[in-house]
Length: 145
Image (cartoon, rainbow, N blue to C red; front, side):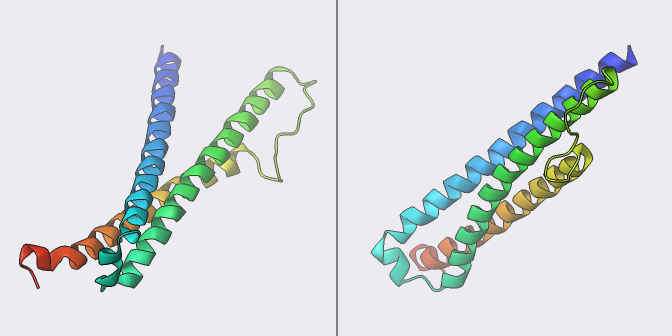
C-alpha cells in the first residue's frame, strides 16, 4: 500500500516538474518576443534610459530558456539511465552502460535540479529588468518623472 502511494506521488512530482519547466520556458520566450517587439519601435529605443537593464533582461530571458531546455535534456538522460539501472538490477546479464559522458543517473538528477532553479532565477531576473526598463521608459506618459 505505501509503495503504491509513493509511486503515485512520484508520478505527480514528475508531472509537476514537467509543467514548471514548460512554463518557465514558454514565459521566457514570450518575454523575449515582447522585448524584441519593443526594440523594433523607434520611439521605444530612442527614449530608453535604462538600456543596460533592457539588454540584461533579454540576456537573462534567453539564458532562462536555454537552461530550461538543458534541464529537459538532463532529465531525459536521468530517466534513461535510471531505467537501465533497474533493468540491470532485475537482469544481471544486462550489459548497457549506466553512465553517459561519465555521469550517472544521480549526477543527471542533481544537474537537472540545478538547471531548473537557475532557469527560475534567470527568468525572475529577466522579468524584473524588463518591467523596470519598460516602466522607466513610459513613466512620463503616466505623469511620473
